[in-house]
Image 1 (cartoon, rainbow, N blue to C red):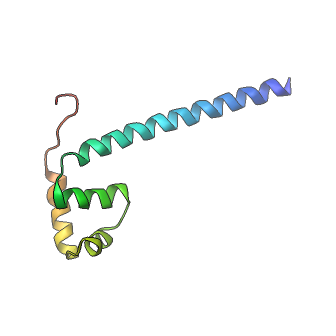
Image 2: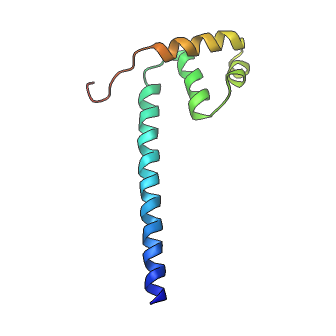
Length: 88
């Protein structure tokens, strides 16, 4: 019955991949929801930082601002209340 065993393992692997995709999709939706709370420069900072995975120094260089200014804005952005998607 080795072929039955291999089929079962493939199904388990596919199920794991589907679970991982579902988890990634939920994360993507959370990120999009959070990004929608920002406009202009704040949006650009959040996008470069969280979607593109850039460091704050890279974000500052890309946008033409000082590292300290970007760091300060990020700190303020993290403190901003976010809308809860279930209540809006």
